[in-house]
Image (tube, rainbow, N blue to C red; front, top):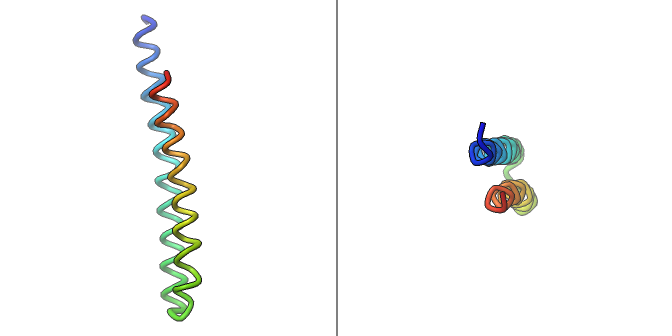
Length: 72
């Protein structure tokens, strides 16, 4: 295996893992928030902002993975 091929595989693995985990996290965050809003619609204002913050923090991990891929 040439060094270029090894770097290509490292990039592919980094973005695959770095994209998969945040996608699951955002899906779970939004799913649970929608479930909570469905159970108690009056609390939607209190649930929506923390849901957005949690999703943003989870997406930040994907952005870190993208930065790692670009630096490899």
